[in-house]
Amino acid sequence: MADLMKKAIKSTFLNLLEQKPLSQITVKMIVEECGIHRNSFYYHYPDLPALIEEIIKEEADALIERHPTIDSIEDALKAAVDFASKQRRAILHIYNSVNRDIFEKYLWHVCEYSVTKYGDTIFSGKKISPEDRELIGRFYVCECFGLVTLWLSENMSKDMEKDIDRFCQLHLGMVEEMVRRSEKG
Image (cartoon, rainbow, N blue to C red; front, side):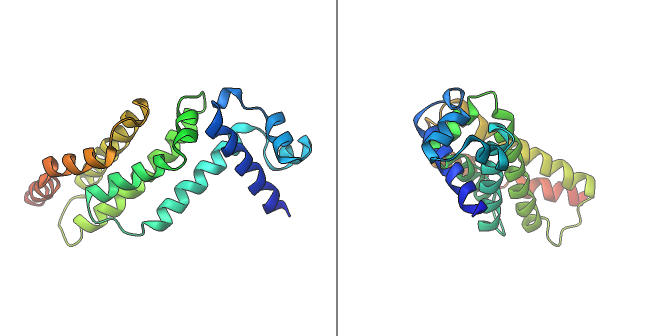
């Protein structure tokens, strides 16, 4: 029963978030739309940020589960874009709110995961120092996060799939060159 209640609260909140900015949504609106008592909401969530965090965490975890391996920088970038693309208007409303940090925390986590899985592929069997591996990884996490947050700040107005494809064409061979240089010492 508790799972059904939480599912109803989340679904109602996301429906409201598709219609209006986060700053215009209240717990009262959610409970009235759900047809539940206010105490039922607070039994499951202390506040709206906790609800937002649970929804975003679940999405991030689901995306990670769908991508057990990542074989290219293109796949890593597309995984991060996929995370941000789910329920576009809702994500933009969260991103453009005072709760942006919650979304960015999990976007960073998705970028880190994607780049780490990509690193597992490209560094496999290579003699690279842990310091170089970490440095290359941090660079790509920042690149991934930066591209997605720039796209979000532009209200997702660009065709990100097209931009990723072009970026990867321009980027071709860079990571392999970094690995080659790292192996040489």
